[in-house]
Length: 67
Image 1 (spheres, rainbow, N blue to C red):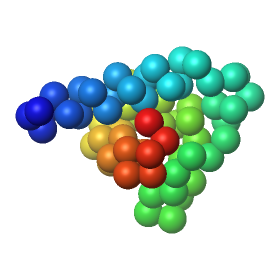
Image 2: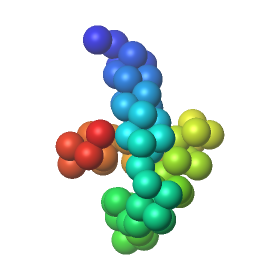
Image 3: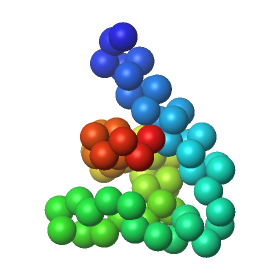
Image 4: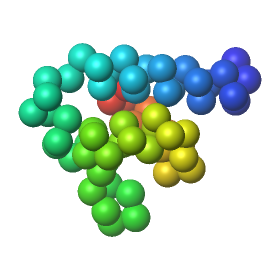
């Protein structure tokens, strides 16, 4: 699997998990980057907009086996 395909796979997995979360859960913190907490909603915004921070979030969530 190429690096670009892996990034797309992580993104799709994240979006699938996010879509199935209860609305209240989306406001919970899922990861801390640079000593800043990131909620599901904030992560969704970053991933949806394909930002560098979104890519970092996806990598971290994959390492933590959350997606």
